[in-house]
Image 1 (cartoon, one colour):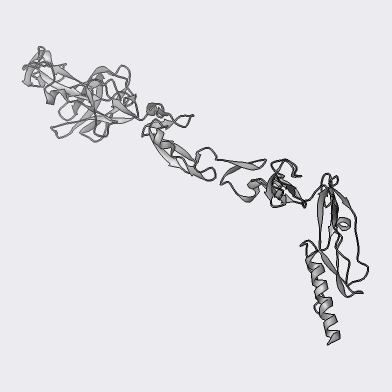
Image 2 (tube, rainbow, N blue to C red):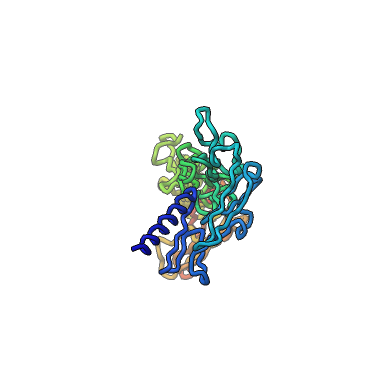
Length: 442
């Protein structure tokens, strides 16, 4: 019992020493697990946890004019002028004893406190008195008996220093990001709007009507469209009229007139624009009644115009056989060297018509036994634009051999000679063909 009492008394004394250690970190020894708490390390020889002297093992544990004081299980940073350092070690015992700063006798309060007017110790606000050791990039936060240094927004603590956070590396912005000390700035590419300082929304540029015609909004931009007959200018917004007439000389049969966004075809007098809007069709003034012919005259229409034909007059010794034919009687001696009949015909011909072209046909209406027929151009072919091609014993065709540029009127006497050697007969008939060549090739 006496030995057990001595053991209990020793345990109480050891607990009292730990309690008197100014509430610093408690030395914890776990012999069974060979593990130590923070601030201690296990000594295999002593088989116990011993204190780590951070003032010797750590590089520059205290900053500025602060003195490092090792404590049992930790360390303190105190001003050099306020405390003097002395270290005491307990020679006997399970481990090294704690190190205490010796407070000057004129300072009755512990570190971080000061004597108030009422004689009690009150906390010193190091942040307000600017007696802290925080650098300019840190924020001082006062605590009971001390203070802490924290980094401001936009910085983080790296190696005891506040370093700027590069927010752009972490995708803070949706599109463009510019890092600045302690912050960042987001911006958007052209065509986008910075709605909430981080994300970018497409701007519908078409709402402001930037295009002269149509507008098509695209992601981050827009595209202008032009109506039919217009093309987009180099500025990308203006629409210029297309001169369709300059594309081809064959767009219209006659004249092309450019209009804003389109074109129109115009025909010369005597024509109208056909249903296709491009070709010119002859306007038949004789059928429409839009002519100046008298009731005694006959209206003859040709391509692009008309003419008024006077009533037939047969010059002596010819007499009128019908409204378009004159006859010279065989009983009349004056008719012996003249064609027996003269038949008047009229036709129209387009200017510059392609050649060769069959344009008129003539043939004998009466056949006589033993007779044969000769077809020839008797007059009017001084320019040799025509020739006769006999197609059978009783017929021939008038062929256009050279293009004729109009407007022009040509009168040809086409002769059919009848030869009968049986009865020794030779006679002829004339077709007086009047050709009206139009001014235009249509």
